Structures are given as structure tokens and as C-alpha cells.
Length: 137
Image 1 (tube, one colour):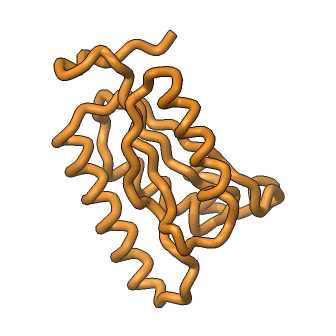
Image 2: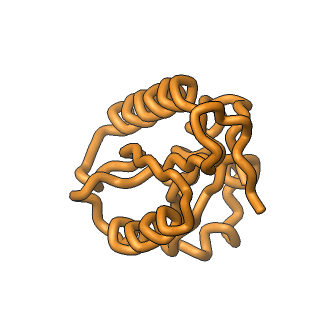
């Protein structure tokens, strides 16, 4: 059974869940809420943080800046509050994987365990010969 990582405020396991904005396409908003409610019923303390954004077209430089802002915001939150698990929703999509590798790298080697939950998209992405992707996965 998962034990808290020395959280002095509580004996409860604390999870920070990275969620998309309410406007984001896809089923993450629909499927994660029942999951979060189930965790709470089991006595797990769950907090949410906006982690991914709607799919409005954006210049690559804007996307990179947004990823860096998100990573900094998550890092500040993780340093200010103790979490046992950081749960990030991702997908088999090149942009999502690159975003998540960047964020995980920038979060650093804190005590919290990082859990990446993959949702469906391009399952064949892992079969493609993409040199950058091969390095990250």
C-alpha cells in the first residue's frame, strides 16, 4: 500500500493531478473526474492543477513558452506543498510526449513519484522511427 512520504500536515496520501482546461477537446475531462472522486472516497487528498490547454492554433514559440510556464508553475506548487504523487495526463502524441518529457525534466528529482497516464491517440507513434522520440521514450 502506498504510504505518505513524510507529510507532516497529514497522514493522508496527497496527489496532484494535472488536468486540461475545461475547453480542451478529448475525453480526459470526462474520464478523470470519476477517477478523482474515487481517490477521494478512499481517503486520498487530491488537488488539481491546469496542465494542458485547449488545442487552439499557436505558434511553436508560444507553445514552448506555455510549456515552460506550466513547468515553473508546477514546480512552485510542488515546492510549496508536499505531494506523494504527481499524476500527469498525456497521450500517444508527439507534441504531448515532448511537452511531458520537458515538464518532468524541469520538475527535477523531488520526492514525489511521477505517474504519467497515457490516453489514446496515435498508438502507432511508438512504432515510427523518430530519432528524437526514441531518445525520450
